[in-house]
Amino acid sequence: MSIVKENDNIVITFTGKLDNGIVFLEVPSSEPMKIKLGDSELPPTVEMAVVGMEKGESKKIRVSPDEGYGPRMKDLLHEVPRETFGDRIDPKPGMVLSQKVEKDGLEKKVPVTVIEVKDDMVVLDYNHPLAGHHLTYELTVIDIG
Image 1 (tube, helix red, strand yellow):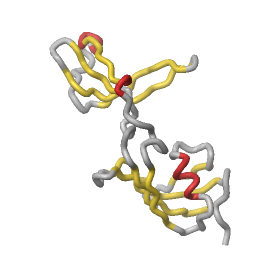
Image 2 (cartoon, rainbow, N blue to C red):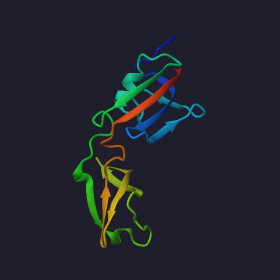
Image 3 (cartoon, rainbow, N blue to C red):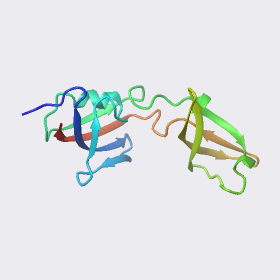
Image 4 (cartoon, rainbow, N blue to C red):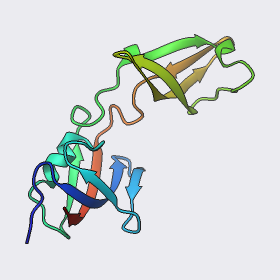
């Protein structure tokens, strides 16, 4: 039987959960995910844990914040004038918005969470929504190659 090696193309299903049991991402067997190890959006710890698995094998992997989406950083909390949103958006705490940012000369969209709404200011959190969380992935290798 073949085993998963570095840089393999694989097909997996998985459920990603927070410590409180909330599912943050689920890839069901009806719609498995095809990835190339080394080029996927999965945390490197998950990719490394898949290496050596066999087709049909399942595994539970726990990922610390440092291995996943990093720690929550206070310097990524920003206050912006409420007028920035105009009439387009009525910001509410918990709302996740998509915002364009420039990094290394490239423009990309990032999720931004509204933390607090004051009379004339809105507090935005630019941390990844999964930053600071321990994550548990329960995954199954469906196919290799």
